[in-house]
Image (cartoon, rainbow, N blue to C red; front, side, top):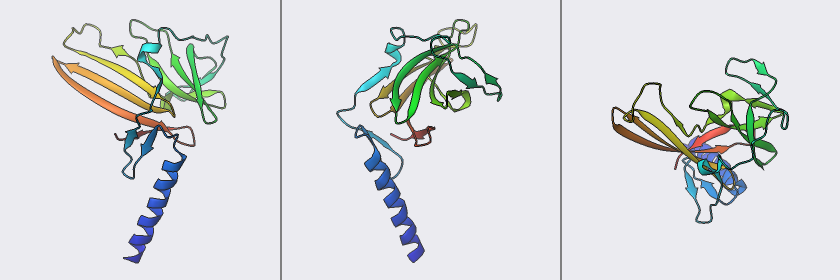
Length: 179
């Protein structure tokens, strides 16, 4: 019984410590839930992609480690976002077909780890599908880097919506937090 009380007390101290380091825009409760405050402001969203400044590999050289573990010496195109703590944050895009993929990435030592990025591709569908089969995504990045990703998935005319929230930890990795 005493051991449980000690463990619960230690967990409570860690949670309080995490909340106090938060930016004030969103709080993380003891059950890993996100609460957006009324003064939460969006610093970048899906709507901003088309008008953002895009950097070519020549203008902003970075390396990427792909899902296959190979190192690629340049990435295609980037949008530079404000830093989070000591980490550079970028939106990475590759050229390809009708559905251009976008990924939100944390840059660590000049490298993007593709497997650790968040997919924020606004719209995609499988070739040959009609309007009854699609998937689209919107995202908002709030001050303090609470990231909200909304997905609408339509299969055979049935729509399923999902909303997830992510944060960046002190090591520069994304993790999901509940709303």
